[in-house]
Amino acid sequence: MRNQQWSKVKKKLESFICDSLKNRVQFTVTNYRKAHDRLGRAFITVDKKEILNMCTITSDREMFRKENEIRNAKSIEYDVYNGNQNYEIGIQAQEMIKAEGIFAQYDFFNAVEEYFNLPIEISLKSDDMIIKILSLIDRRVGMRTLQGLKKSILNEKEIIQYFYNLRCEAEGIRTS
Picture 1 (cartoon, rainbow, N blue to C red):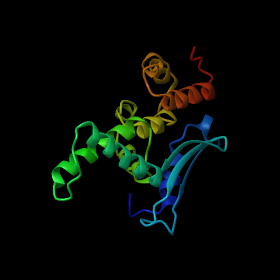
Picture 2 (picture 1 turned 60 degrees about the horizontal axis):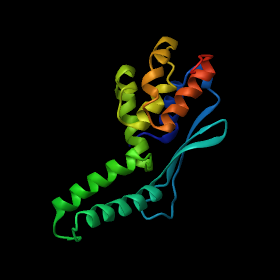
Picture 3 (picture 1 turned 60 degrees about the vertical axis):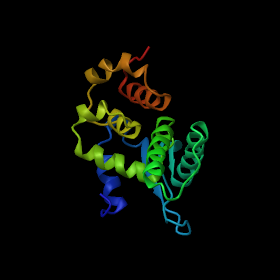
């Protein structure tokens, strides 16, 4: 997917949106040319209101903060020569910020690529919030499947519940 143009990826992504949300949900990617890595952010809007922001700068800042929290909690000083330790702490920090719903633009691209390659049944059960959101608005998910998710959605993060309720409302399914 990295070699594809965003316009083609966006078109493919939008082709999966269910009919009831077709013109309501949009995906946008903005790159900042003057940023050191030229990355920016990706965001999902519903009715022109930004719902999920996946900004690389915000993610990097939170990642740095979490890495420092982990080091302080374990009384570990940063050692530039200890690559394995730095890597492990980085992985822990990334898992923590993702669990909080803080994503970078590249997290969005990775999730979209994985989503394109997974069957919808597996996407609905994914631990990745972005993949789960994409599958909840997917045209391949029918009303019975949505109704079957009613109880399990209560255990999900607020953003997942938002997209579940949005889809159910658009399809005329009662959630309460």
